[in-house]
Image (cartoon, rainbow, N blue to C red; front, side, top):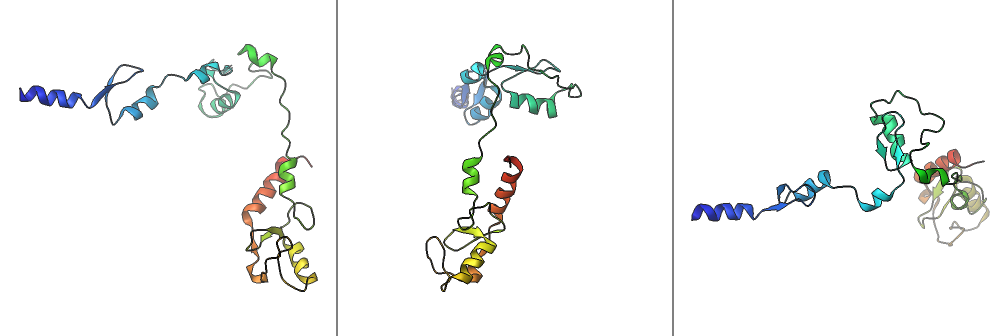
Amino acid sequence: MLRAKRQRSSHSHLVQCPCCGRHVHRLLINDHLESCRPPSPARRDAPCVECPACGQSLASEAELDVHLDAQCPSSTATRAASPLEGACPSRATRPPAEPPDFSPLGDELKCPICMDLFEAPHSLPCQHSFCRECIMESFRLRSKMQCPICNTPTWRRELKPNHLLEGIVTAFKQVAPS
């Protein structure tokens, strides 16, 4: 009798996987489901793309690129001019992609003083950013050292280089058309 109780209590920690039917400990079911989960309905409706080298079906062109670059056993095969031809009927009706419009981003990456892209951007304690030369000239022309936007008093030593903004401007210059 005691033995049956133990078995019953140990089985109460097991749950059945809805995908494969295996009995898995209830604390491990989420890990099991990650490896056992069938494709979601949204993924089944996604445009289908076939690898031209091995014929594997993939959900998107991005997955195809990753597959061809790193995973495909026939990765030495070169992509044809139209590798996706016939792979998915919805692909043929899709118009060509337009290049993204970077102008809103470019507007945010302009110095409020010179209205040009930041050159050596520096930030004040009030978090406003300016080109280094622009803010130094502003300090020279004004009788008080203050932010040109919000008029918060500041000191020259509080002016700090904004390396993150400089990196964003550099990346923007590489991807945006001149």
